[in-house]
Length: 389
Image (cartoon, rainbow, N blue to C red; front, side, top):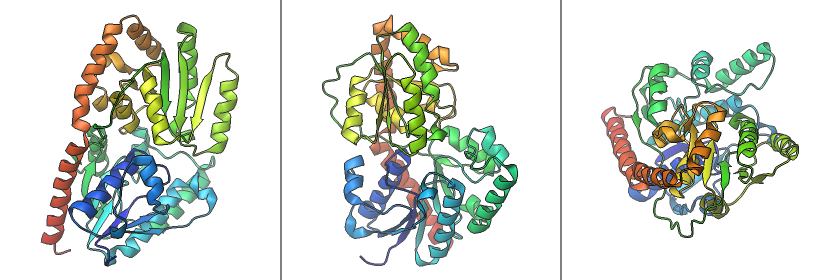
């Protein structure tokens, strides 16, 4: 491969979630449309076969190189702030070797004019992160250790927030764009993550089943679902419950298993399913619950909509842009039971909401994403050239 034109930074590609899909699409546009060579900096190696299995993306191996930052195993599930600091420090050291600089995982000071796609701001002051429910999960109980840990991480990264503010920025939702405006006093464009809308949806035979797709990780608060399921089982004992997703935290998964076994009804936990197995769950499930408050976006919500699995979301954050219908929004746990009971007692409402959601899906198509992200990359390239960088 010729010398790379683009340095692209993204933390991981082992588990392909919504942020990784955005990154892969940007990589594909850079290599296939702009004919640029891309060097990826990540904690993961770029396993093209694994990526293809999980996401159906066929990347151009001849135009992609990668550099994997190796860290001890303990850093995979803990010390997020430290991991990101190391990634950012390395990116800054490499920046002079590349014509273009791209972060597909939030703000990054490359020490040069860069393109950054923001899923959720991670570098703001703690008070602002707490305000929007974006704060780091605490690594230490001790306030002194927490301050020391933050200080060490910040010194490693050695960021200049002036550079971050100068970067060409795109946000993944209006909700996140407004937060970036509040935190950095900086306007950002909005380009929604996308979903392939061309996959067949045959044989959508629905069970009375409630589904959630989520990483099994403490910061995802999957355990909140259990009390919601308890309420639903009391009112609707014939409903099935399934939670599936990538197993990130073994101890947390064991905790969930233990809690599920205490129930006198069945909750299925399905870790590390491949993409077609997850599709089957969407196709056979009637309802999808995303319990997270202030969700940044939620690609799984889009996937549920596509397979006519009605998403029920908290009345906050980016979820409201995906599901703008009050009949599917809840504020308190008991509202989830009321929503499902109402639909079960009125099957025509199920069909009406499915139709409305299909129409809303069109603005999240891959064609729309590709057109918009190309426009913003073009603007970044032009500004980079104008500034002589």
